[in-house]
Length: 110
Image 1 (cartoon, rainbow, N blue to C red):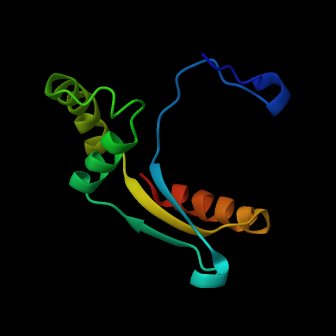
Image 2: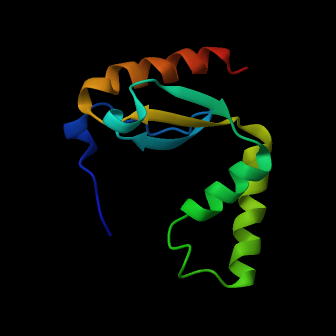
């Protein structure tokens, strides 16, 4: 089990909060792909596949019954929460722009 000392990183909310959007992150080498930040909507089907693929211990729990249970939890999520693909350049110097892109996008989510 790993623990992150949240107090050292900043504030922590101990109450449930609504989830406005999910972002599938794709970091790219700016020398090969440029420095543009691209955000595009992801279909529900593609979002479901991506979330299942990124679930903890997917390979260990790949038995059909586990996949069905996982899908049963994730299907309502992708039906209610918009999912976006966020392609951004690698490098700390780009993080303020990436952050602003996410904040701007969240203003459009209803």
